[in-house]
Image 1 (cartoon, rainbow, N blue to C red):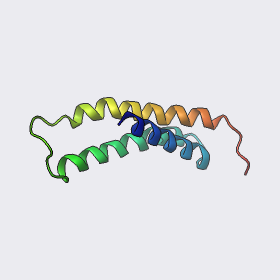
Image 2: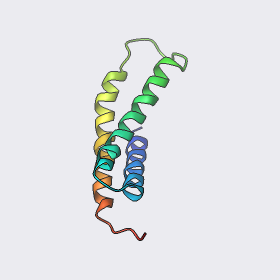
Image 3: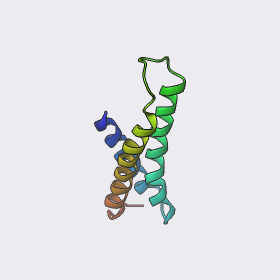
Image 4: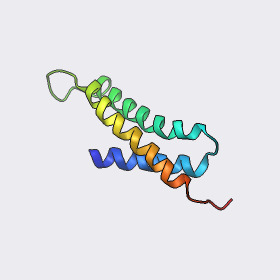
Length: 87
């Protein structure tokens, strides 16, 4: 699961670095992976049928997984922003 979160976040960070200019994309590179993980967690919690009983742990998953996703997206954005892209 971590591989999926990190890979998707890195891909979003790369896409933002490649296609957006200015200062706002740095925020976007962190915000998109975080909200994507939140959307998936809420979808799996409230729309999909319940797989098991017990307490809901999606806030904890969002805290740790969302933080890793945002940091990965932002870091990838910073790395690829330093590359020069042909226009």
